[in-house]
Image (cartoon, rainbow, N blue to C red; front, side):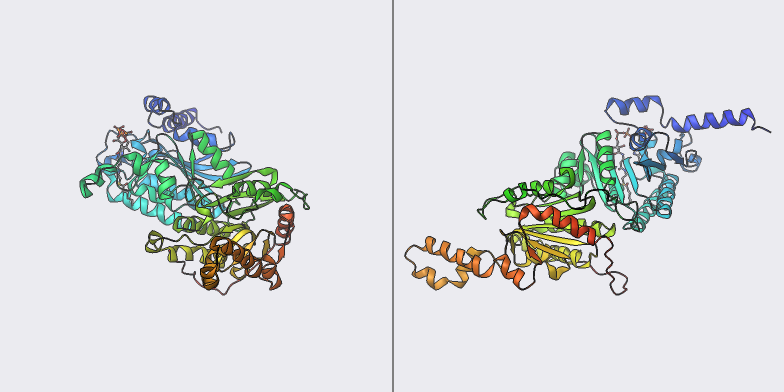
Length: 517
Ligand code: HXC
């Protein structure tokens, strides 16, 4: 017995209608703006012919809420699972051509169904947001839908990586689902995200602002720190997502995709000997150090334009995936401030969730002094770094390149904060404070009596460095493990990472710690 042709015809017709979304005209409008459709975004993400769609024929019964004439193909969202570089990844892509991609109860149900599938199968979730927000006609049904999506984002957090692409409008509470995920990529044109738009802000507060100022990718990256990457367009966003996924495990029970065929003993890299200037006041670009530490000199910087005084990035050393946290001496002399602390702390937490060893590159003069910093809660924010390092159980390796002063020495993961290996370069200065400040306190009398005060101060500073901040003093008391030539760093870390690959650190059971938020 074969299946009746009319049933097959019906299936084909229904499939075609559902796949057509809002229809040719609306699709043409999207293309004219340089945007891909919801389906095209997923096609771009997945290996051809690997996408299994869930809920193609789902749609709310519109008769119940005053949209009698509306057909809502797929209820305005395409969901399912496809393969990226041979690994399954759950995908959710909102279809703006269907009721503006607005979220109603069936739309939300489709989202949480595929999120549940991702949790059960242990695979990352990638979403493309392009939506007018809560579907107005569905009232509280759409709010409830958002609630269930947020709840699932929280349940998946730390279980599987979650990456959001903001590819169009993301209005109101819709931005909270991406905010609950691990990384947000935003496209440069046509994408916006806000809780209250310019019109609401004006009518409630009288303040005038543009969408550019509050909702653009630049505002979210450089000022608010809400997003992690800006892409040129939809295919650019997909390339970033794919590159990011290449460093991440599929779930928290797996190791990240290490490339252990890579050579175990690496050659010395003489360039590292030349990167740090002799003059401790002269800045250098720490990204050059990250580049030379990484296999094939490749790394992926995250949140490049937010709090650039700290650099966070993924890379591989001797094949082992690592997360870098590095002070950037070129910006604010690499000092830690509120934004840098938030940026680093969240990255440390992400690495720890997904078994990614952490490499800390230290050149830090301290926490940034200032009224704004104190009143803004630098104590609370800086404490996030201490908390994040202290609670991270992944391998942690610290390289003190130059300055490591005061609380910031601890906040960059000293041995006492749980580092498995602390190395210092001969240029390192490890002390309670910098030489100039310390000399002013310790040698006030000598300085006031000196004929040539600046000269005396320089001499005393040199003496202080030798007496109180030399890396050999720290090595002598085992505060650090070794002092090494910079060119040996990559090789030393590669070997240590291999020896720590099966590191297991257990802590007393508890519900969770209480990170200062
Ligand atoms: C139902 C919606 C909709 C919505 C858009 N549409 N938003 N339908 N509910 N929220 C429909 C439009 O009626 C239109 O249908 C189609 O989508 C395209 O919309 P346009 O306005 O023509 O497109 P465009 O000019 O590009 O403007 C896009 C937009 C705008 C900026 C997103 O539509 C907009 O401002 N929408 C409302 C945004 C908003 O305030 N949402 C609620 C946020 S509050 P037709 O049939 O004409 O094609 C919220 C609460 C969630 O989300 C709380 C969770 C905690």
